[in-house]
Length: 291
Image: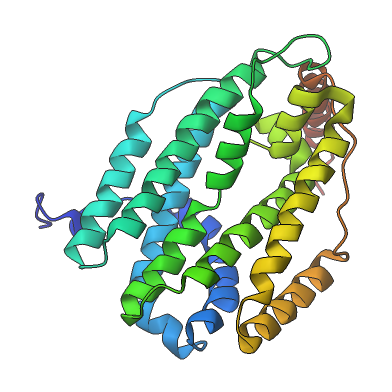
């Protein structure tokens, strides 16, 4: 029987969370292992338990948080308890330090901001008519914290291999993650509107209306400039690895250019239309004759 006072014996994840974590773990391993001098697949299996458990637990907490944001509810206790559990296990495994603690707290801050921002967005679905009272500062803070899971995993790689942190690399990866998040938000924009999830383009439409795309392009340009400077400061091997992974990602997506979706200026009507179309599709499917 599991001991109640043993944090490592507490169940924290569902199978669905494991499924969601799989793609992230694969991308993280292919992208980040070479930066730390690790190879696949051998080194992955050495650290599989820690990396997979941490990422899947974070995904579980994220799923729980998304259920709250979808309906505009506020409850910080579940994610706070979840982060506390992760900290307990990592401390038990002698992997916790101030840097890991700081990034986990950034995750807690992200979920807190997401709940608050998305609650206001849900109650102001027509950004050209009604303000959600967002500020650029809180939107940018939320965006900067979004990929905290990658940063936690990266720090854990250093801790697991007992290597000192490479601050130049960590600074570069933070900028790279922020740019990837913007790209993902543009791809996922319509889905995030439907689910009432945090999305930087969605927030920019609320902040800047019809100038949202222009303002986000300016933000992207600023981040890309910083990204280029930090990339130039990495070793040649690291730069070559970055460009190789960048080409692989671009080939998978079909393009490495920024593509903006049409802005949705009436989210409530958009959700109603999609829900109606999905209901009609289900009803139509139910009338198909069984052979």
